Image 1 (tube, rainbow, N blue to C red):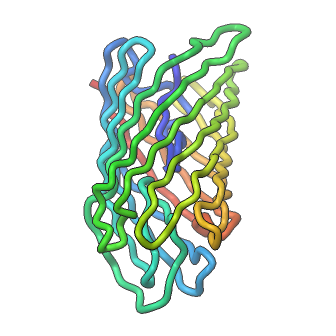
Image 2 (image 1 turned 45 degrees about the horizontal axis):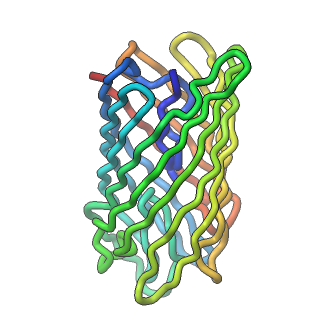
Length: 260
């Protein structure tokens, strides 16, 4: 069975790695919710604080997984900061008094197909297509007001209790009237360690190219712990450390998954 994947970036594939999916039988459905909080200056002099609360529905049937993410987002920042579809900043901070704006974020739909099921000598390989719909209010700075599209490949291979994994993706960013965004490559490297039958932990390193000429690339690391209470219920906690102006200075969050 493949690990469930919730990518930031909440953590592009990020938040649900580290254990098998809750309720991962054939034709299974699960719901995930929680929070992601991050804070960073993004090259400016004042902090931008983002609270991202997603509700994620996931349906698995055979080799196919369908996922829909509907988020609430709250951004406290100076003027000029715009939220991304994954709870991250996509435009650098501007000037002005700090203010708080909140509301519906950008809805994200994803479809994943397991190309290789994996085995003793072969890795598991997933291919995913994603659409970020521009449902966030651009006048409030909660989104760009344009759709984004992405395709990515995810690879996993278990060696006993340890599972290394990686992601390579490409994102097409919708241009706005004020900004011509660059399409970007992004990637993830990490590993999950199964502590026991219920608990896993892991480390994830995320990279993404800069989306504008004046911005910085994303470079951040996430450490997490995941615990399964039973075959259908799982909780996870994580902490994030950014290393460039394109990433938050720090972040933290928690997720809970219920299988049906």
